Length: 126
Image (tube, rainbow, N blue to C red; front, side, top):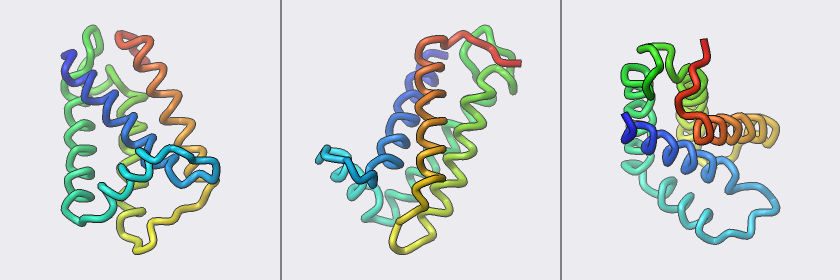
């Protein structure tokens, strides 16, 4: 379904913005505002995690055609699971700081999946 594809791309992009917002060379004010919008309120953080779980479930059971169910968007689902664990651990902390090496690795992996999924939406990785 194309709506799930668009929802997945938007969620991956928003997650990537939340991961890269604390980089030292960040000069984009909208990234800082987006981070403050999500992190400031506990209900918004819970909604963000629920959206992550919902996007993961939709990608597992309704992949972009011709993908088979449960394996069609495998790389995207793996990335969403990593993002879910990352944000659950991050949201439990009070200061919302994370190690730079883990963040950079996750950010580049998310960026690669985002670009690959955008360019080749019908690509099936088995």
